[in-house]
Structures are given as C-alpha cells and as structure tokens.
Length: 604
Image (tube, rainbow, N blue to C red):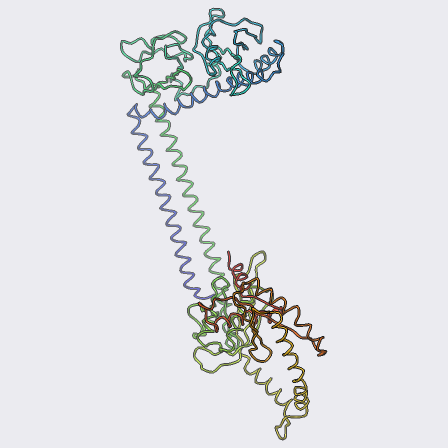
C-alpha cells in the first residue's frame, strides 16, 4: 500500500527488460540457424560428412533385422517350452499339434521336434533335412541361435535354421531340440531397409560372402582390381576382407564416387553393407539446407508476430495497471485522511515474518522498517506489566478464527506518557487458503477509560463529602465477611497440592490465589499429568466447603534446565502458558503445546 510510484517504475522497467530479453533471444535463434545453414553448405563439399548418416541408417536396418529374427526365435522357444511341459507318455500327435500351433503363427517354412536319438517329428510330416546337423549339435549342447545360410538341394533355395534346446528347467539336462527353417527370401521381404535416397545400395551377407539380401542395383566394384562386389545378389562372393569389417570409406571419382559403410549386425557372422553415391549426398544436403532455411524463416516470422502480440498485450496491461494504481492511490489518500481524524493507527502483521508494517503514510513516527511485536515489549513501547498479555495477543491470532482484542498501556515513540490503547488483530482470510497476514489497529481509549473511572468514582463516592457511599460499605462488609472462607479455601488448595505432588514435588504459594509446584527431574508427561489431576480435583473443593460459588483453576506448565535457564525466565515462560489457559478458558496449557502449535502454523 506504500511507495506506489516506486513500484510502478520498477514494474515498468521489468516489462522493458523482459521485452529486451525476448528480442535478444530472437536474435540468438536467428544466429543459430544462420550458423547451421553455413555448416550444411560446407558439408556439401565433403562426402566424408555422410558417415553419421550412414551409421544411423545402418543401426536402423540392423534393429529391424534383429526385431524380426527375435520374433521368429520366440516361436521356437515357446514351442520348446510347451513340448518340455507335456506329461510323460504323450503321443507324437500331441507334439505335432504343438508344433503346428506355433508353425501357423510364424514365417517358418518347416518346424521339427527332434529327440537326442535324432527321431524327428515335423509339423507337416516332412522328414528331417540332413543339412540340419550343425544346428542339432548346437541345440543338443544347450545353445540357442541361428545356423549358417545353406542352399537346400531339395528345395533349391537358400535357408537357415533357428534352433532351441528342449529341457524341463534350466537345471535339467537337454532332452531334445526344436528347429525352425527360415527362407532367406522371407528375411528379405520382412526386412525394412533404410537408405539416404533411392540410389543408395544395401546388402546383408555372411563372412564367407554368401549374400542373404542385396538390393537390385548393388553391382558396383568398390576396390580397383578386386572382385568382392562385382556380382549379382544371391551369389557366393568369397571371404570378407578383415580390414573392411566395421569400416567407413569413400571410393571412386566423379559421378561414380560413393561413401560406404560395412558393419557387423551382431547376428552370428552376418554383416551389413551400405553405400550412397556422391550425387545423392549433394542432393540430400541441399534439400536439408532448404528445409532448414524455410524452417528458420518460419520461426523468425512467428517470433516477430509473437513479439508484436506481446508488445500489444503489455501496453494493455500497463494501462490496466496504471488505472488500478490510480484507484489504489486515491483509496490510500482517503484512508490516510480518515485516519488523521481518528485515534486509530493501522498496521499489517506478517504471520510468517512476525513483523508489523504501518499503513499510515502521513504519520512519519510510524513509517520505516517493519517492527516485531517483541521489540515493542522490550523497548518500553508497551508497559512492562502488560508485555506478556500484549505478546500473547499476537500468538492467539494464529489459533483462532475470530478477532482478538486487549487493552494495554502503550506510548508513542516520541512521547514518554503511557496511554490506554485497545489493540485488535483480525486475520485476513482468503477462501481456500491459510491466513498469512492480519490487520492490527491501535485505538487510543485513554479518554474512554478516564470517563469510565469518573463514572465509577461518581457511583462509589458521596457527591457532597467525597467519602465512600453506602454501596461501597456493602461491598467492603461482604469482602470482610468472605476472608475466613477464602482462607479456608486456600488452606484446602495447599493441602490438595501437597497430596497430588507427593514426595517429589514442592508446592509454593506465590501470593493471593497463585500457587507454584516445583517438580525436580520430571518430564513433560509427568508435569502435564499433574496439571490434569489438579484441574480434575480442585474444582470439587467448592462443594466440599459449601461455598455456594464455583471454584475455577488455570495451570501453566513449563519444563526447563536449572543449570542453563534462570528461574525468573522459567517462571515467565510458565506465566505465558498460564495466561494462555486463562484467555482460552482452558484448564491447563504447556509451553510445549504453544511451540508445537506455532511450528505448525509457520510451516509452509
């Protein structure tokens, strides 16, 4: 509510800085895309820059091949598990039905279940191919995998085996094997091949040169004088040169120049080869450059439009803020004028920071840094005899839904005279949120108290002689007659305290109707339990003594270390708890409960 002009200048500066920062970001984005365009243009003049692209597409091709083969392997593994789970004495027909179930789901040309004596059961009733010896021996040794590619003399095509051992559990010996026959052409149809352009060439082959798959246009000879690639797909090529395994390079000149990559697939001894002509690389890089430039222009245009929209929005918001600030300034001026003609001073109390801030801008004695209520009690602003009640008022506002109020002797910073002041705290509540602030009013009620004293004086004094009148006489007589009863009650209270505190406690009468019980070596539970028993049994003295009036009790409990805390300070802490018990109309309150309550309120 103060320093609105400074706040407005700060918010205006913040908005300007925000717009400047946004402009710098847009400039940075433009520079980034300009640098990227320069890099792409530079890459057009080197074929070696295609290595990353070739490696990425090779990984994609290998991932697709692995995924397909793992799917086919899973059918063989599930068939082996199902066969191992058949009960003893199952027939060949039971085995054949299981094989047929998984054969129908897979891409296999044939599936067999083979026992250790090489008795084979086929899903289609076909005899076992002798070329499966390598796969059988590996399966009987407890291994799973893929065999080498071979040319079937019976079916005149290239194929390989997927084999898995059969055993009841991993700890049991192998009892047989399940084989699946996969045609190479089936792998070629299922393999998703990735290339940089339609002119790129891809092949999958074994180390001995057996081509598993090759695209139709793979007829180039990469090494001068060599014969490794100078053949059509599907033909034996010869051994793979060791120096080419996992290699990247370039070959050829002019229109015949290519960048090529040869890597292991991780599947048995299979390899993947891929190359891209120089013309395709240049076309690809040029296309990427155009796409990036178009994207940069689009982003720049979108940024400019966004900047314009943000500028319009901030101008509208600035107008709204200006109107709100003008309205708030007018309200503050009216409030200041109203407060000048009243005896009320207004503060805002921060519940989390425990500080008060004055709201009256015209009162220079109350402006400045926020002040803590404890400081007012310590520096003498609040009379010493009222400091405890004054601080308890600020504690109570944290625990109640209603405004709290108290009358205290308070003096202004520029005056030495204490004046009666009514302090009222009202929590500012927002629906759905815990209160964070409270409005504090200091109202000078000295004249009101003076008039009350004057009326009381007139009611108790004879107007002619200024002596006490008959009404006071009646009160004095009642007080004198009540002393014996009061003495009896105090003695009974003392006796009860001695009885309840037993041998470990020391009851003490502080004066009047105030008592203190000292419990050496007690803990919180012991002290609070004694307070509860006092609150339970002491009110019963009224009926026992036939007083005709009820007897109330309030207890404050505090635990302290005599070696570390002075007795006077400990007594003041207990007095704060006692005051809280009186104000809340409760029987007993401990300082531990006050601290735990304050911690819960301050916790975010």
